[in-house]
Image (tube, rainbow, N blue to C red):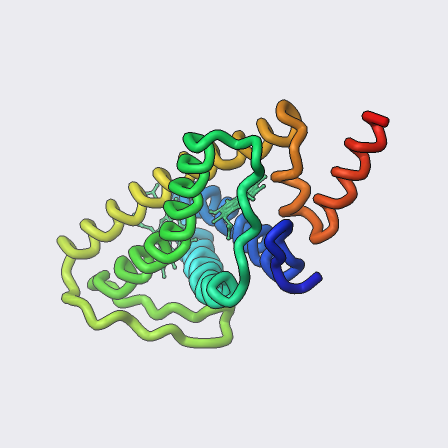
Length: 197
Ligand code: HEM
Ligand code: HEM
């Protein structure tokens, strides 16, 4: 139940997937909105929330990666073409990479900014700045890299979400249910064989 099998994701991988996915998508909306807010006090507080949740994504993704390395990956469904398998592996790789690169470029903005505003993660822990050259040019470079990478990863995530819905509602296979519950695959297969007999 907790660990992955060759057939399905276990509870820990499922929780990691959904908690991180939810925060990541929330961060895109928060990031987009906070840079466009005109009230300074509100903007300052939104930036602190954005940085805190960003570090949460980074920390959870590190733990998720360790868990992934210690678990088997459920096999691809047999009916998938080699093109579909290749596309899904590339998309998953890009999404995993984004979970690290997007927060790290965000951290680089905070570290290179001449304002040197400290990051208090959820008002609990002070996150140190990265040892980087502090300048307006460096800050602008990392801000633009962070924005580009965040929006590009949002496009890949949108494709990923549409693909999951396509499998569930159009192909009616077990791809989505095995990411919803460790027993989802068995239940759906029982339903399918039940409805055929
Ligand atoms: C899951 C992780 C993250 C996502 C998806 C994300 C996404 C975004 C997005 C979409 C924007 C708006 C870009 C724009 O329209 O200009 C933004 C801005 C920003 N993010 Fe993040 N971010 C993440 C993590 C972080 C972290 C960890 C930090 C800092 C420690 C950070 C610092 C910033 C800052 C300072 C800005 C404003 C840049 C500016 O003033 O132009 N972000 N982020
Ligand atoms: C409504 C939103 C989402 C849905 C419905 C969804 C659905 C799924 C499904 C069904 C799988 C399993 C695919 C398979 O077995 O081959 C999966 C895997 C994955 N998803 Fe999502 N996802 C969503 C959002 C996200 C987001 C926002 C991210 C990251 C930013 C993400 C990253 C991943 C990654 C990295 C995997 C591969 C997991 C692994 O093999 O270890 N997903 N997703």
